Image 1 (spheres, rainbow, N blue to C red):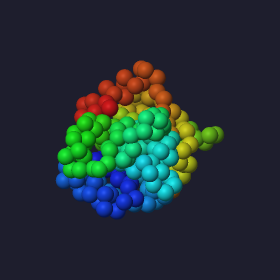
Image 2 (cartoon, rainbow, N blue to C red):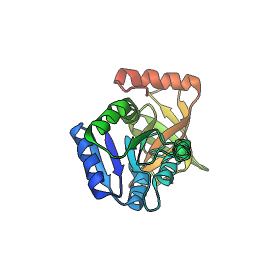
Image 3 (spheres, rainbow, N blue to C red):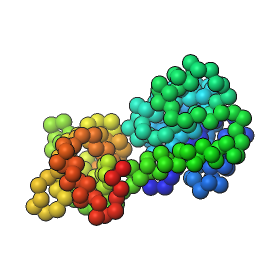
Image 4 (cartoon, rainbow, N blue to C red):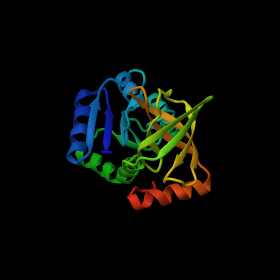
Length: 229
């Protein structure tokens, strides 16, 4: 998965400047000036990090961060708030809702690139967390009272894309049993449906798995060179 950065800043000039600097640092950066449109994209698209202006027409940076932290796709993505304010109470409130870093105005290239270096490890960890490899395994999915038999199309340490046979509801929780190889004991987990593709494909993010199955899952993934993070 490529490193995707979303910049949300209602000042068009500053928004484009930040995008240009991030692009020059070999990051795939997209810029938006409309926070309402940005909120909609953050619900349906995965980003490695998000830059948010603190003061914008609703939703502002605080509210967008709150939405990000409660979302299925981006809740652990690093959030960098762009602000010209240093008032302690405001900064404390921003940290409370889940902001990771501050970028203070006026923004210049040196300051922004310094912040990129500081946040690079967090951004790369988030990108690796969703790295996937094409592996087909049998999977049983229990959704409510229904039991579906399907297969994985790709997997990562935190989730999988499955062919479920019918449409699953985004945000719902399902129980899965994965057969890593023919005849092997199944790995069991609960998972959240984070996206759907067409009528029968679903992206699942693992929510809970017992310690023994976590070990077996990672032992299966490691030879495939998928990082544990």
